[in-house]
Length: 573
Ligand code: FES
Image 1 (spheres, rainbow, N blue to C red):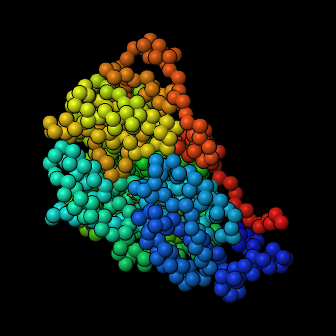
Image 2: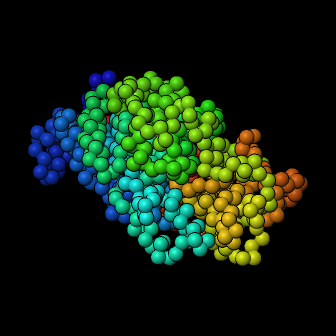
Image 3: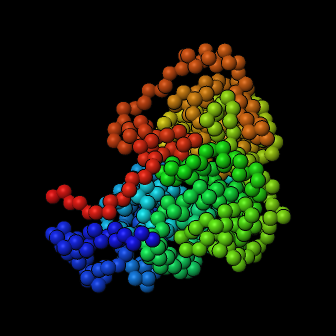
């Protein structure tokens, strides 16, 4: 501990006119001197929004956090930030992740906060909040919003949104009716909380806990479970402790914490999106986290968690089976057990007493779903800066495959032609989509799960090799290669592929290659020019000009690294 005065003191303990104004305006909210004098000020950074169904319960969660802060002698102040909802927000929340991160960072920096609790839920609200807080770097705890209850339809459990994709294919293949489809709509989402498969939101909740940024045992608690609010209250008490101990976010997010999170990502067979977000956090904190590390740790980390989309169960089952502590206890020998966490204890201390209750949902170490993890990083002539693939969600026969490329210029072209009965495609073809990357789309939407052509679906084809510079929803599945870098829009090799070219995937060798002569590629490269971009203004222009490629986390180049928070309030009157 440095013994330095608290940051909020620079606003609230001043004897001058500024101090008068700061205190007086707080009093206008009805706070007495006793509410805040000499107390740590705790911001509750709330991504609540009625536009974001997954986060709609967070106002109530904030009340629980406040209760905890008050119990521990702090002064809680809740504030709203931009929120990002996967389903309603267009063209894609990923376009706005960095904007929300800027909102979080600057709101923390500009205000008299000694610590902050981040309330997150839907996919991008979690990484955006953590990226912003990482750059501001004050004591921070994350309360993840919890998954929805399991969906139910006609006696079977439904997962959002893996079963949306599954039943949409059933509808396109004519195996369910329009009436069934409408019934499913009301059956799959039946409580507040985020998607309850091991999609991106659940993955990021687990990764947050593995990083040590959330209290142990919290990632899987369903949003509707009363224990979720009790944990939020505990987080309120814990953040006051962290402020007293002067534990900043950068003290928790060390290289060891990142390695723990990557191990957990593989053990849970989590979303490929986590690779982008963890890379972006590391960039903010100056931690070296090359894409290759994800692959290196994959081969020695067993896949243990049997959740959709790669497995069979859902987050509610995961919680009852023991949740993340049970998983981490199984791979204890692979973790940095002395890494600190926001609970005040180390990772190892947090895991004491962790119990594995259901061995079908969480496999014991000796009986994994696979010995070697689930996310691989590919290199090769089609992706010199890398691409990723979730092999646990793919049919085995496609993990070593060579086929004829069928190329789609962009998502509109895909939508227009994929179900054309005359499309020259068969089950061995390789579907290639370009202009789905951070610059090309823009915002790298979740277009990477290219639909299987309807005529092949009707013929019984259930998986095909698909390649793009886009992302894929964490709830999707299939032999899908994503995040190809550099992307087509900036002249990556994906821009040069033509229908009829041979493409070769070799997962064991971690290769993805375009089987075309270098002289022919050189000819195509010389003839290539970037697409005309619409004349954009404001944030979208900034995004297109400054976003980094997928292998660097799609952050803005000027946001890498942190900026020290102000310790003195300066007024420019
Ligand atoms: Fe919010 Fe799936 S829509 S987590």
